[in-house]
Image 1 (tube, chains in turn red, cyan):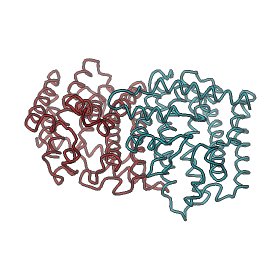
Image 2 (cartoon, chains in turn orange, green):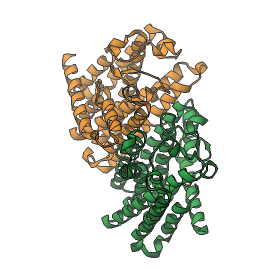
Image 3 (cartoon, helix red, strand yellow):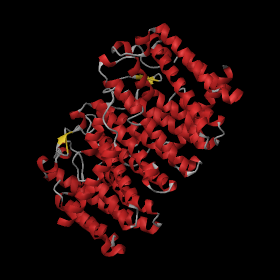
Image 4 (tube, chains in turn cyan, brown):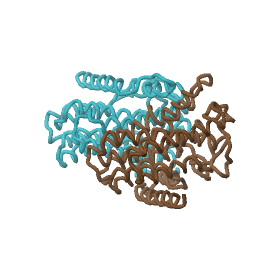
Length: 295
Length: 295
């Protein structure tokens, strides 16, 4: 696990450096916006999605510079979604990654705009020639990322989370919501390198299967942390789901069954990696990390 | 002018039909989101930006199907920006195009998400093979649109509008703000067809010059309408700028000088069209329309 932690930290550092160069510098009268975008995207974070993009991409032979761009675009999308989800009209969170959320550190208008700016920037990063892939592949990255982020992906998942009536919350809607809200971007992270490298459909399906199971295991673990963790450990408000009477994997399945289910999904995720043999060991460690993390 | 009004209405109808097909149907637990996206994008509107995209594109020989996709993506971006700008934490508007704004017709969370969904969809529309252009040109459309919409474009312009301190508001900051907030997307609309058609750099510069002058004339007219028009005419709240003590072209230049300046810019915009001869007559009429509109 020590090697793994070093690898994920290295990936996180590389992505932070890349994002620092990609984000506009804070100057001019729009400074609060640019500063808030940097606050949201460059702050502490595990960078699990960029790590997955980089390591899945390496597994299929994608080129490093392109992978780093993809990883940076994915982190922009992730950061934007956190900023908007934390807004008072949404989850109304004051704490994120151990710091004040963007609308607390700045204000609501700046938070809405910083999210918009990060979302927009992600597509520019992806489509730009510096992504070092053919234009056809860059176009495919844009359309797939847009699908993962949009109304049938993350945005739609957040809508379900906000608005689905209490009587509809069963295991099927929680699963659907999480597949859209969390799973779609994790799936794209696993798939991006395969698009970059022009991997065949079989390889892409394998990585999609891996990402699907890993994404659900990730979310169940998140629900467990929300139910059982502390804010000082997780760096964000905990116990919120229960406080709001929200159904989660934990409230529906119970803690023990949720933990079993996460373990089953993690094992399944590893099974998908069989065709890659030992070369996928780092991803197997990532599965363990996702399952056992405390934040 | 009668022919012109018929042409712009035809363009508006075609774009509305295209958007209706491109926007996801409202079903599933995410229905409020999809319904709000349709409400925002398919409601009444002059569709000036899509019209400009289509007519500038025709002028340089761009293909019709691609133009309609570009026009639809541009309208998604415009609609998203209105939804977010109208939010309580931003301009706090209740009325838009004669109807309740999205956060009034739905709620704030749905309005934030509907804007996010429309912004994301625009890039998917642009990058998709159905846009009937080479992947290289689709990538260029995505990067240019992203630049026009992002932190150094519309989002940055809105930030300046919200946050620049009162003592900084002179003619230079108002011009900078409006070039970013309004001018950038009008500029992209004028340029998109040239990218689609692979027009040479000279043609693109000509259209950029046209769009720049038209965009400023458009905004000065908007400020005049806000200062002198009524809500029943404009379909949105008026007198807001003055009520908030905001500097506009009208408060800085005075009404008479602002009107003169709009006329000068309109004449300049037409001058840019000289190389196209009579084929650009519809765009000359568009300039007159922008200058004399009452809403």
